[in-house]
Image 1 (cartoon, helix red, strand yellow):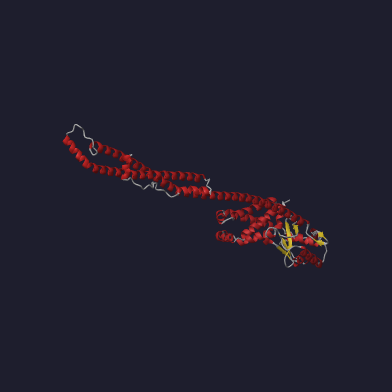
Image 2 (cartoon, rainbow, N blue to C red):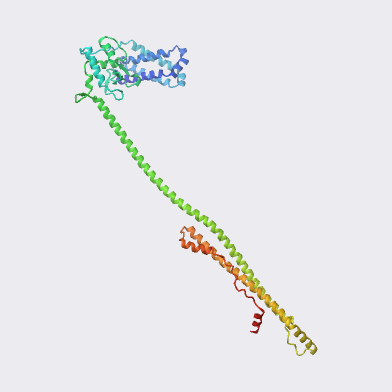
Length: 460
């Protein structure tokens, strides 16, 4: 016995070939490149359509023939994938087409399976019409929501029944939406009561007509509260669909939960990074402020270091100058007293009286004038020394003051770099001392040495 599943696979392949032959590109290639081989795409398309319309005959073929037909249909579909394949495998493609045609000729010689109703109940046309109307009323309006599924006798192929807007019954073969079969009431009445032969679609019509005539078609519906309900198979199918959707929803919920947890973790990480960025920004601002202050204070430090060096050099210069002037004053005084005779008052006894008298006269006449010169010279020298000492001490004081500022600035910079900061009171104390007014360091004693002071010092 031929495997029904194999017949179903062959029928599916026939529909695939039918759809392929509807492709305008395939049609154009056949007409352009296969015309020289005495091949007509229209004739081959009609043959495939007839194959499909008489698919009930496939069960009359041997299983080996069905397998070969299935393989040839596959080859045809493979060779017609694209234009390059069609042109490269032109001869094998034509061979495959010829083999399919041969199988069609074999089936052509087989007798048609006509619609026969076994043990047909004797019901009137009017009763049949009522049963048809009742069936149409019970059916849903789309194939997706179909509430009645039947099976073909040949191949046990399932198909769905539903009604359209005009109240006619539609068969959905499950192969393609375009292959829905409309079975109106008048068509079925013509077949049953007027002996009209409809070979097309008879594989499906046979089942529907038999079940309406013997009234078993309604056995596929369950009764609930005296109303016709859904058939068991539909209920089971819907339950399975609901279970499947339930699993899908649970899976989606689990994915959403995982995604939410992942986003929550990412949000926590982003929040942490944001907090760190705020901390880093604050640290950066503090560091920036410290660097700017450091630069400003470094300039001040450099300035005061230069001042320390300058005042220290001046202090040393004036100190050495004072020492030099003091030594020079002592040497000059010594020379004036001992070698110039400026202050000679004692004349040796052995000296000639005339010379002695002459010298004595000269000394007495010049004595007062010499004292005045000596006193003036000494006064000027001492006054100069006093001024130089003041300048020296002023530079010394300024050098010490500048050095103190340098020390305070360096201490302030170290504390800034440590980031410890200051209290406002401490900061004010340090800055007030760093930027206080500079004293010139000169002693405010403006009294000068007078002649009376020198004379009084000699008397002492």
